[in-house]
Image 1: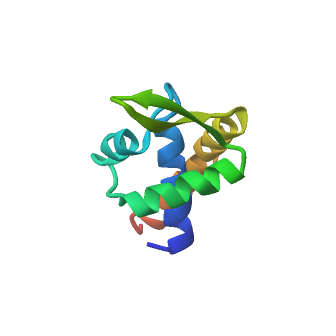
Image 2 (image 1 turned 135 degrees about the vertical axis):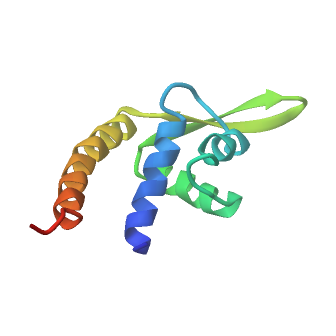
Length: 103
């Protein structure tokens, strides 16, 4: 798979994982694991990129005596998810064209 395409898909997966509630690294990896394999190093690179793009914010909270970073999706992140849905409809249309039966 094209690296740029995969990068974009992983970004959207992370945003989707935190869409309904704030989450933290380990839980995000666990939530996306049934759909896509993602290492911790990949996840934290994505989280930093999304934070710099203002698609998520970060806050810390104590959990079990340790500080844990929680990630919250912003309106820009929600907008990116909506854009992805629109883009995916176009991708599916192209896929249908490419995989159509000759005849």
